[in-house]
Image (cartoon, rainbow, N blue to C red):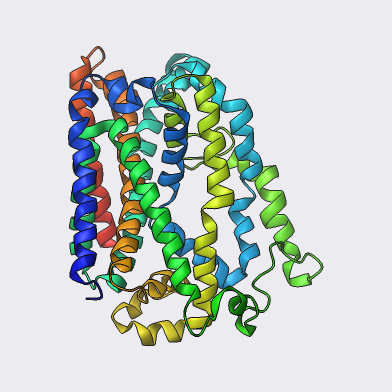
Length: 412
């Protein structure tokens, strides 16, 4: 194993702290469904905004950005940077409206906007489809990324990764509800960013890289550093359509994902609904967009660029990590670069990646359970059930979702 005892101590302390937060707020979280799924609608903008950023900082996100940069250069990130425009529409239009609606979940809004049995059917169907099926698939893909990283950093087998990563997350998520998720997200995001910046610093110090100036002038990066695609190049003309026109003309209304823009559905809407008031909802989404697009990706981009110098081909990655040869791709270059970290720093970065995983999974667990409980169980199975029963079902659903996601990740 690459990790030294000091690294394992750092990771263990991180686990203990995360569990302590869930236990500390468990009694309050169990008082009613609004507390368990919306943190009592009393959260400040800065905590909600950081939680949104932490949730979208998943274990597989640095790998994804690395894959994009190695294949298409820095400009390839416009595949997701393009959504900043519709994200700002959520800030100035939708955030106030979501908080004003007073619903507990975004799909509860269907029966306010529409009426009759079709609206009720749509609400119940999407509660199960998104809260269970879609949600489990997303969590399984995130867990699969964690399996890839742990195979390089920890030399762990998939079943070991799933057990270690899932048990801690499901315990504090089921105990603390959304309030516990938000508080751990705050701590975990700080950890994640410290780890990301530390990884970028160490990558730049590699002899092959030669610091920032050496990196920017290295011949391996020719054509990779441009911020904007070259639309005069015939090979890149399709980028104009795929990256700039399609998101604005088609994808903003035709594509759904848990934080979809504009509107900020799913777990983004959940956080707006948990805000103290409309002003705090607006501030939260503004902070999220600023950090998500302008702040967070740059440490990953630097590591990705350094990886092109250190591991220029997939064969070089396979030779360096034969134990992971079956899953090697450009996305694996990020965890490969982390193996150069010194003891102590490696434990911090490993804890930051675990934090990224836990913040994403805990959000998906609480969000998915909110759909199952509020929009299916309490609406169709047990109308009129008391608040404590809703919380109990929410906690059981949280555990069940994690078991399904972990099992699917093992199959994948």
